[in-house]
Each structure stands twice: as structure tokens, then as C-alpha cells.
Image (cartoon, rainbow, N blue to C red; front, top):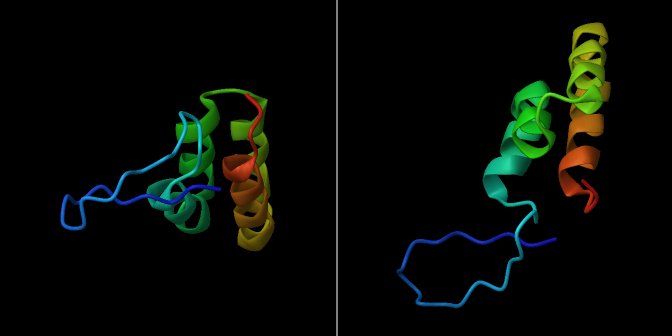
Length: 74
């Protein structure tokens, strides 16, 4: 997992690779699970599953969204 904040205040080099989760992705996955999944995976099956889980109960939707956001696969 890579969490980088590019603020130019510390001049630190970020070694994140494309596709790694960042703070924004994790916050969206916790606060608005379908939006976090949409941002990471697009309009695929994972998005619709996240919508259904979030509508059924918010906690399973959040857990699923964090799992999707943190996973490495496309």
C-alpha cells in the first residue's frame, strides 16, 4: 500500500506506482463506497456489487470497497 500526499512541503520522493491506493481512494471507499470503487475500477461488476451492498447495509459496502481499492488487480 502506498499513501502519498504531494504537497511540496517536505520535498520527499513518492515511490507510488500507478494503480496504488492513496488517501483519497481510501476516504472515498469508506465514506461513499460506490464512488471509491467507480474511481478505482470503473463501471464494472465490482461497482454494481458495491452499490447493492451499500444499499443493503452500509458497513458491508464499505468493507468491500476498501478491499477493492486496496487490491492490486485490474
